[in-house]
Length: 433
Image (cartoon, rainbow, N blue to C red):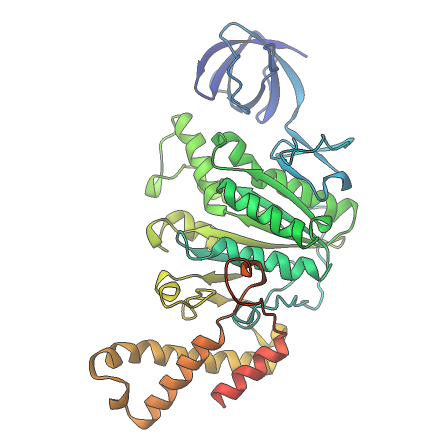
């Protein structure tokens, strides 16, 4: 393959000049330095130069060094050897064990597959054991659920509980993508899964907040590549957990900044739409297997109208909104019942009984929201008998959807709880009927 020469280096941005035979976009170039740095071609600004990103941030890269084309894009190792392991977005182990003996590799950058279509089949509900999710945002195989909330309201804990409850059932393979989150949270998740013997059905891919933005921006794509492999080659149903999708957008924005691209709305990268869409479209299902995605979305300054939050939310079938006000009341999970919604809450999917109950509960909760301001002024006893009864039902419902988690047993004095969908529906009927 042809060679180029490093002409300039600015942080992670490397300009490589070629005399002929320019590389392709997203092709990997290998530098002739101590670490054999991998450079990803981001753009071709002129007829002889390639603007590249230094993937690992290797500091031994210098101006004037030779760079060789590989003729292929960035690849990640895939295979059953990754099950039970923790690797970074390049497939390198970060769990302290030896490198997985993997022979198969797949490209990280690719378009969503169009050659295998997902058969039309009856929606399959996966019970999570968490009342508020099973009732308001039914967990349907092959669909996407988002857990939205600000810092410290319980997004990661709720995700860990979902992994615990669903992985414990042994259905399919769980894949966890840790995108730009705290190292402590990744360690806690690993120890939780290890302690409950759930690593045997889990692959974990991390690019945490201490790593450079290029590595962090690749985590979601690498995790999607591994998921596609197990779906298409092993015919497995995948439970894809991403924590945190906002950090994916943030990492892409940081890369855009170092590339000196002009920002768009809200200060985000001009490619935000395509960045989000490209990843979300790959989390799809076909006739070989399904990918069911659960994604946490950090809300900066608790502002749900943030452009990045809105962009991600448009790709989801269900959204669970966690509220700081609810958390301050000591209710866990701190779900804002009035703002949580799902397009899957229909009679065709959940059945008539569940659907009718959901309509009744939403009506009661809306009445509750309108009465809260009045109660704060005149007190509950001054309400009419009918309003007082509705208000009391709403308060019981709010408490009913509170639940103790298995993954929080070590931090609390309460044993974890799990409820079937039938138990949840029956409990709601006892309150409102």
